[in-house]
Image 1 (cartoon, helix red, strand yellow):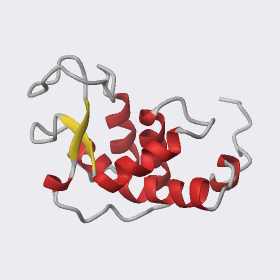
Image 2 (cartoon, rainbow, N blue to C red):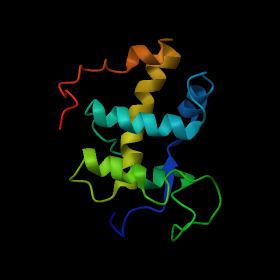
Image 3 (spheres, helix red, strand yellow):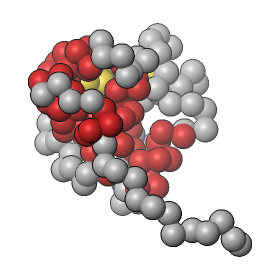
Image 4 (cartoon, rainbow, N blue to C red):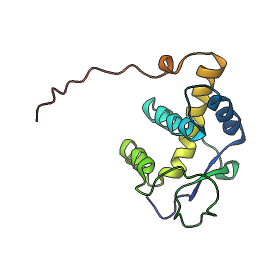
Length: 140
Protein backbone atom coordinates (compact mmCIF):
# COMPACT_ATOMS: atom_id res chain seq x y z
CA UNK A 1 0.00 0.00 0.00
CA UNK A 2 1.33 3.40 -0.93
CA UNK A 3 2.08 5.90 1.82
CA UNK A 4 -0.16 8.32 -0.05
CA UNK A 5 -3.26 6.16 0.31
CA UNK A 6 -6.10 7.44 2.46
CA UNK A 7 -6.24 6.59 6.17
CA UNK A 8 -10.00 6.57 6.54
CA UNK A 9 -12.74 5.19 4.31
CA UNK A 10 -15.63 7.39 3.34
CA UNK A 11 -18.91 7.20 1.48
CA UNK A 12 -20.74 9.70 -0.66
CA UNK A 13 -24.03 10.94 0.77
CA UNK A 14 -25.97 8.88 -1.78
CA UNK A 15 -23.95 5.70 -1.10
CA UNK A 16 -24.41 6.21 2.64
CA UNK A 17 -28.19 6.40 2.19
CA UNK A 18 -28.19 3.31 -0.02
CA UNK A 19 -26.01 1.32 2.37
CA UNK A 20 -28.43 2.11 5.20
CA UNK A 21 -31.28 0.67 3.12
CA UNK A 22 -29.24 -2.41 2.27
CA UNK A 23 -28.23 -3.19 5.85
CA UNK A 24 -31.91 -3.44 6.74
CA UNK A 25 -32.10 -6.57 4.61
CA UNK A 26 -31.62 -9.83 6.55
CA UNK A 27 -28.59 -10.87 4.45
CA UNK A 28 -26.18 -8.28 5.86
CA UNK A 29 -24.76 -8.16 9.38
CA UNK A 30 -23.61 -4.56 9.14
CA UNK A 31 -22.72 -1.70 6.79
CA UNK A 32 -19.16 -2.94 6.41
CA UNK A 33 -20.46 -6.24 4.99
CA UNK A 34 -22.36 -4.26 2.37
CA UNK A 35 -19.28 -2.14 1.57
CA UNK A 36 -16.94 -5.11 1.20
CA UNK A 37 -19.41 -7.03 -0.97
CA UNK A 38 -20.04 -3.94 -3.11
CA UNK A 39 -16.31 -3.57 -3.78
CA UNK A 40 -15.97 -7.28 -4.58
CA UNK A 41 -18.94 -7.13 -6.96
CA UNK A 42 -17.54 -4.06 -8.68
CA UNK A 43 -14.23 -5.87 -9.19
CA UNK A 44 -15.89 -9.11 -10.31
CA UNK A 45 -18.24 -7.38 -12.73
CA UNK A 46 -15.40 -5.15 -13.97
CA UNK A 47 -17.35 -1.99 -13.14
CA UNK A 48 -15.62 1.29 -13.80
CA UNK A 49 -14.56 3.14 -10.64
CA UNK A 50 -16.66 6.22 -9.97
CA UNK A 51 -15.24 9.53 -11.10
CA UNK A 52 -15.98 11.53 -7.98
CA UNK A 53 -13.80 14.07 -6.21
CA UNK A 54 -12.45 12.78 -2.92
CA UNK A 55 -13.98 15.76 -1.12
CA UNK A 56 -17.40 14.18 -1.83
CA UNK A 57 -16.58 11.26 0.47
CA UNK A 58 -17.37 11.70 4.15
CA UNK A 59 -15.40 9.57 6.61
CA UNK A 60 -17.24 6.43 7.69
CA UNK A 61 -14.58 4.00 8.97
CA UNK A 62 -10.96 4.02 9.98
CA UNK A 63 -8.59 1.46 8.53
CA UNK A 64 -7.00 -0.02 11.63
CA UNK A 65 -6.28 0.76 15.27
CA UNK A 66 -2.81 1.92 14.41
CA UNK A 67 -3.58 3.87 11.24
CA UNK A 68 -1.55 7.04 11.15
CA UNK A 69 -3.71 10.05 10.62
CA UNK A 70 -6.68 8.27 12.12
CA UNK A 71 -8.61 9.93 14.89
CA UNK A 72 -9.00 6.51 16.50
CA UNK A 73 -12.76 6.93 16.42
CA UNK A 74 -15.22 4.74 14.58
CA UNK A 75 -15.07 1.15 13.45
CA UNK A 76 -12.19 -0.45 11.59
CA UNK A 77 -12.77 -1.58 8.01
CA UNK A 78 -9.60 -3.64 7.60
CA UNK A 79 -7.49 -5.77 9.91
CA UNK A 80 -3.83 -5.30 10.81
CA UNK A 81 -2.81 -7.71 8.03
CA UNK A 82 -4.62 -5.49 5.50
CA UNK A 83 -6.67 -8.39 4.19
CA UNK A 84 -9.16 -6.09 2.46
CA UNK A 85 -6.42 -4.00 0.81
CA UNK A 86 -4.63 -7.17 -0.28
CA UNK A 87 -7.81 -8.49 -1.91
CA UNK A 88 -8.08 -5.30 -3.96
CA UNK A 89 -4.45 -5.32 -5.09
CA UNK A 90 -4.67 -9.03 -5.91
CA UNK A 91 -7.49 -8.46 -8.37
CA UNK A 92 -6.39 -4.96 -9.43
CA UNK A 93 -2.58 -5.24 -9.49
CA UNK A 94 -2.16 -1.84 -11.11
CA UNK A 95 -3.68 -0.16 -8.03
CA UNK A 96 -1.21 1.36 -5.56
CA UNK A 97 -3.80 2.99 -3.31
CA UNK A 98 -6.31 0.22 -2.54
CA UNK A 99 -8.35 2.07 0.07
CA UNK A 100 -8.87 5.11 -2.14
CA UNK A 101 -9.68 2.75 -5.01
CA UNK A 102 -12.17 0.87 -2.83
CA UNK A 103 -14.14 4.08 -2.30
CA UNK A 104 -14.38 4.59 -6.04
CA UNK A 105 -15.38 0.96 -6.63
CA UNK A 106 -17.90 0.95 -3.79
CA UNK A 107 -20.06 3.60 -5.46
CA UNK A 108 -21.08 1.51 -8.51
CA UNK A 109 -21.14 -1.66 -6.40
CA UNK A 110 -23.50 -0.14 -3.84
CA UNK A 111 -25.65 1.35 -6.63
CA UNK A 112 -25.91 -2.11 -8.21
CA UNK A 113 -26.78 -3.86 -4.95
CA UNK A 114 -29.34 -1.20 -4.04
CA UNK A 115 -31.02 -1.35 -7.44
CA UNK A 116 -31.18 -5.13 -7.49
CA UNK A 117 -31.98 -5.90 -3.85
CA UNK A 118 -33.98 -2.88 -2.68
CA UNK A 119 -35.55 -1.40 -5.81
CA UNK A 120 -36.12 -4.66 -7.73
CA UNK A 121 -36.61 -6.84 -4.63
CA UNK A 122 -34.34 -9.62 -5.84
CA UNK A 123 -32.57 -12.08 -3.53
CA UNK A 124 -28.83 -11.85 -3.06
CA UNK A 125 -28.39 -15.26 -4.70
CA UNK A 126 -30.04 -13.88 -7.83
CA UNK A 127 -27.61 -10.98 -8.21
CA UNK A 128 -24.36 -12.85 -7.61
CA UNK A 129 -22.87 -14.67 -10.56
CA UNK A 130 -23.29 -18.44 -10.47
CA UNK A 131 -20.26 -20.38 -9.38
CA UNK A 132 -18.27 -22.12 -12.06
CA UNK A 133 -17.42 -25.79 -11.68
CA UNK A 134 -13.88 -26.30 -10.54
CA UNK A 135 -11.42 -27.87 -12.94
CA UNK A 136 -9.05 -28.62 -10.07
CA UNK A 137 -9.16 -32.28 -9.15
CA UNK A 138 -7.50 -31.63 -5.80
CA UNK A 139 -4.36 -33.52 -6.80
CA UNK A 140 -1.01 -31.82 -6.39
